Amino acid sequence: MKNNKIKYQTTANSNLISKMKNSPYYRNDVTYHFITRGEPGTYNAYLIFEYRPESFHLIDDLLPTDEIAAAIIFRMVLIADLMKKKITYSNPGYNFYFLKYGSIQKIDSIFSLTITTMKRYVEIGSLPIGQNNTITDVPGVLVGHLTLRNGDINTGITAVLPHNGNIYRDKVLAGCHVFNGFGKSLGLMQIEELGTIETPILLTNTLSIGAVANGLILYMLAQNSEICNSTGTVNPLVLECNDGYLNKIRNITLTNADVITAIENADVLFPQGNVGAGMGMRCLGFKGGIGSASRIVKIKDKIYTLGVLVNSNFQGSSYQELKIKGRNIGELMKEKSAGAADQGSIIVVIATDLPLNPLQLNRVAKRAEIGIGNTGGYAAHGSGDIIVAFSVSNKYHHFSDNHLFLREVLHDDYLNLAFKATVEATEEAIINSMLHAQPLTGFLNRSVQSLSQYIELFDDLLIEG
Image (cartoon, rainbow, N blue to C red; front, top):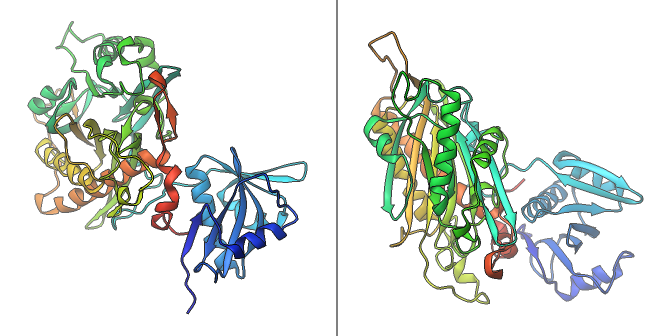
């Protein structure tokens, strides 16, 4: 029986080399990569393409059936998207396969595919994902970024909005968990005491906590004239990770206006990786940053969503523990020098429309640490592992004429699905944060590689078309 294994390769055997050189498009001054099916020497299908700075440019193929072609081309599209490249080609016959993955333009004799449809790269666990596989699959939740990238400055703000209304007047029920407390996050104490969130959740760098909190307070005061006049104060929720390796963190460059911009940029669709608060982050030896994933949970006859957003910055100098779907990728990277043990941090924000009370949300938050551990994290001494969870159900009104707060709450017997969804989505969000991230050279000319640069080691773990 023929081997059906599909593999991305940066080197080729003599058989493929001869095929490549027989192509009328072959040039001896460029780099070629391959996607093959089968075993070396007996490949039963393949694509050969130039590896260009901006694109994969197809020059030859062996695609014996439409089914095989679809599988191989899907792998190519997935990898090109991870590497932020277009796919280009001269043969219009490829249009049939590529049309469903994005927009195709023709310039002179060259077709160019800009990929727009990829929502997932690695399948973690068994629960189904939401529409976009992000935290914003939870109804009403929005995410926005403000990113600063300018030489030594590589930082930003990420804003998570529990809903698009007035969060102070219509609070969401919440819980939090500090697994390892090497952190400077602001606002957790009141979540523990009252079980509510009343502002957007802002993520940033460690030394910008004060500046970002000030901007958030001013934003809330402008939105709510009653604060400190006819009612109490406000609890700004600002979470942090240290991006000082790639960002000149002592400059404290973020401003009040940047806070407003991040909040106003909030939308259902948002970029991941090197963006917002994730701009200067490292994770498990690679470029880290913002990642997200979601899960669908069915209880009785009702459908619920749970979504996770992470800012991954733990074990930034050490790739040895990195695991993807249980495979220790670090063990395969013999040519990469081992980094020193490092701590770093991770922020996890969990959102759901499951009707959970604060005690249950605390319990959900704790399960995120299992997802972190599944990727190779171990909450090192200097790591701040901070998790916040909230539910968009049962909003708590700041002003109410009713002396009773009536709500539906999920029975504890059904919490296991929420726990499972949290573990799966957290693990996938961390992997997504690294897969979306691109290489970066920042402060003091320090450089961090992208996980996608080593995709040949694990492309067989990617989803199949």
